[in-house]
Image (cartoon, rainbow, N blue to C red):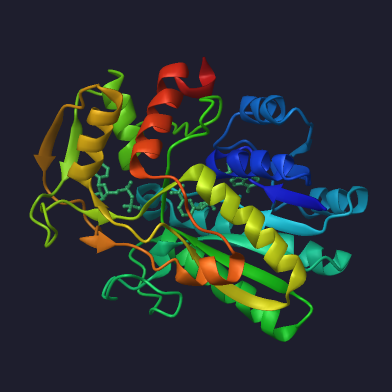
Length: 338
Ligand code: NAD
Ligand code: UDP
């Protein structure tokens, strides 16, 4: 089976390409490298001992997409390509709506023309309304997003559901990720944020290695066991394996289906810092600061539907995530740049 992976050079995409190659799939990547480095794809191929086909370009480019679908017999598409920084989406909304919506519109247009209608989309737990009770089920309320990034995920889910309802030949999986962290256990591929990290784990690893002075913990007065925010962290390799399961599901079904990809367990910011320090025997200086606007106290998944219907379940624990994130950081102190 041949899988087109948009955004395949990125953090989750690179790990998914590796799992696909391990699983015997042919992999075709399209990525404009706006937030990634081609070294990631070289390392994926070295780890897999197999090659993939790479097209450098923009997923909004209809001519490029038509060429790819002419040159490759694509059985299923995994659509990762998109911009993902929440804060940046508030200051640059047009850029986020343009990139994240027009990639999907161009891709589905060309898939329709080519008669290739199996699609997996990278959605996010951010589509869930903040007032839901935990754990979040796929049927929990969505909408009321607090930033343009979240709205692009919500709108893309609407677009793909509409396309799928209009033409039952489509098979669409909307995968709602919780908090992907960690890296491949080899330390060869991992998360390589540009500039100051927005997310917790890369901030922890960069602090531990001395690139940042100290971690700021955003609030310790939430209604949680220790007052800091609780999230459902999932190892990126487990997440990548969830995509392989979703490919098999998508090609065997029709219609649209939504799946949570999380572990079902919530950990606080202090749990993360303490586990990281303990597992890696390294110190992470931190200070408690004000809450970050837009953050909620607690967010974790009910992963039961994914286990039942995809036959997939996260297997790695928090210690694995902390160890692998640190291994990647130590082997690549400046990310792929070095
Ligand atoms: P990433 O930035 O590492 O990867 C995205 C990739 O898409 C990059 O390689 C980038 O160069 C590419 N890209 C962006 N716009 C493009 C375009 N117009 N044409 C071609 N390539 C383009 O991000 P990631 O963490 O791997 O996330 C992958 C997807 O998963 C994104 O859609 C993101 O919104 C979604 N997601 C991520 C998280 C997370 O915490 N990392 C959580 C939920 C959802
Ligand atoms: N967080 C923090 N300091 C940081 C980054 C994040 O205290 O430098 C907290 C944040 O408030 C939230 C949790 O860590 O409770 C996870 O944040 P992240 O941005 O990684 O993911 P989110 O769930 O917000 O998408």
